[in-house]
Image (cartoon, rainbow, N blue to C red; front, side, top):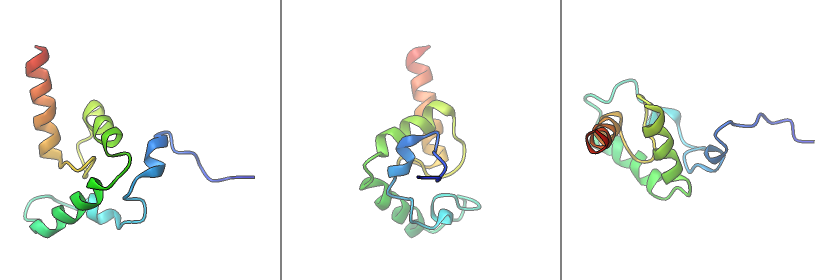
Length: 88
């Protein structure tokens, strides 16, 4: 019998980031972060089988923190702004 909790975001259970240090994807601050830090997180995201679902979820829910689908919070804000301009 499997007693592990089930993640509501079932796709997240297949994320390439599962075994990574959470600090890599959720740093205290993005400001002043060395370029290698973001590049390493992006490299993990690029090979992820659920990258598209991850990014879609983060953009649609307005996720303001962390690296999701290979994007930073600022990049997701720009994606949402572009979508809103096209829709409006």
